[in-house]
Length: 93
Image (cartoon, rainbow, N blue to C red; front, side, top):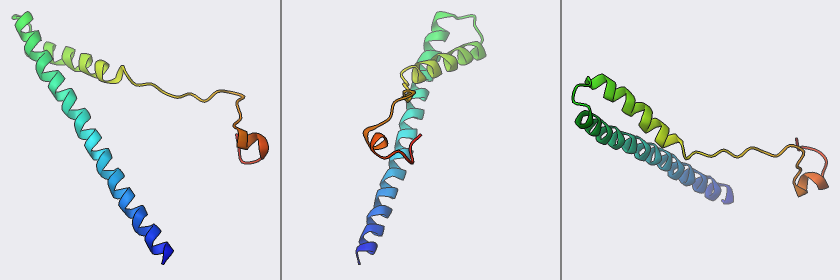
């Protein structure tokens, strides 16, 4: 009985996480598309002689740089061991 309840909860949580991942991917893609539209309009207004491909490529690079510039990564400290790892000397890097 308990196993069935836990299995159902796990399935529900997996479905929620799946939809959250899909939603976040959609939001990220929508932000990039909005950035590209606005950038291309501004580029074409500023440089009337530039071909469409030049503005398109420059805007793709700019929007990708803006989208991923806020990413931060956690890098584990070398030589640091958590309290459980210090207490039990196995199973830790």
